[in-house]
Length: 536
Image 1 (tube, rainbow, N blue to C red):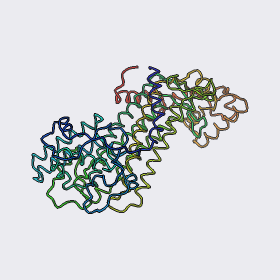
Image 2: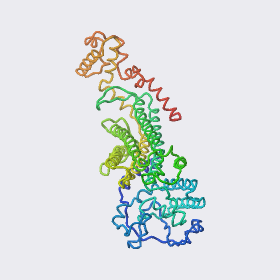
Image 3: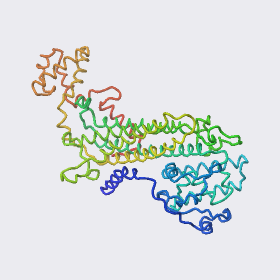
Image 4: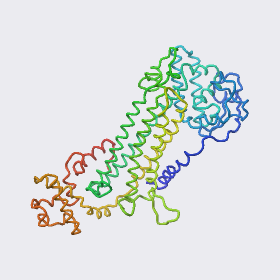
């Protein structure tokens, strides 16, 4: 593994918390004006432009939001401003804008608008010529955004109004027909469902990649026995492969939850309008089909107010984060001098600014720490929604940043966990020396007595007294002579030694799903096939 690449990945992961906390509302310089003729030549849509002093100013798509001139009289009239006699104050505008973060939805917004425009034309609500101008203009706006040449404006509030106003500047009157039979209420819901669907499709391969890393790590350590713990105390011996597959199983359930979430969110709100639907003859089934949804949402009030899909998505992410945090906690402990079970490579470790000897498993500590923000984002959404009456309320503008942050964080956690898995070594000698402590074969000895016809509770008592005898002699169960064992209970026979010692204990597990060698080998084969892992 290239240590430079690994260090870079870890560095970027660690810095993400700092970058996400930066203020998104920056100083707002005056717009740079671009002559309409120059814009027309640049876009190739000269014939579609109207003679207007309005412009689309260019800047980086990822740059901070800029605003209009500070003079309120110079402000652009809002697209919803017909019944208003005054402009909103600068304070209100800064507080209510969402373009600083919801521009993340631009692809989905343009996709939804294209589907809506096509449906309006099919239903005779706009003519084909206007539809074509709208579609061409939207494609050009997407090109400008992705080339870093689009000017995001805070005075246009959000991604929807920025794109619609820019389209109006670009093609004129036809753009004013695009919002027919549509509200921002159903528009943002459609965008957000599309975005979450895409995000799920991004996260699932990251989970599968971590599964591959864990199964690969297990394949490299075939036959290695480690102590199994309950209550953080030595309990029973388990194969390391069995132990690692426990995390693989958790991750598989994580995938299942995301798949289920995706299926439930994949219904289309577009056409529900503000809350009551529309009196115009739209075809919501066509729009839903074109956008890849299963069907339109059946109730227009529910369509614009539902955020169950967001809460469910964040819940699924939170469970993933908890699983990764538990894995991180274990690896941090096992990398300590007290355990010494694993050694991370230098490429996934960091040092101390004052203690020269330190080698810290920082990536997994951060995985453990970042789980808190993912869980916090879920709590934010639950708290946001708990007091809202139907249907849409402006509070719901606050649903996006927690989701954007959670997705970014979960992807980073999954990626760095897989990177760490590829760069750790299990210290077999250290583990082997640690195995005798804790009488890990005691339960197997109880099973032996059950097979001899002793009731389990009686067997439990006999083995308990045997362990106490070992503690008094500072020895292990397998070190007791047959006479010593028979002094505790005469049922013991020569075959008892086939059950004592960690290796024999593991061999005697036979139930489905147990740590028995044959069972684990079978499950390893299943996962290798399922994940298409090549031979190690």
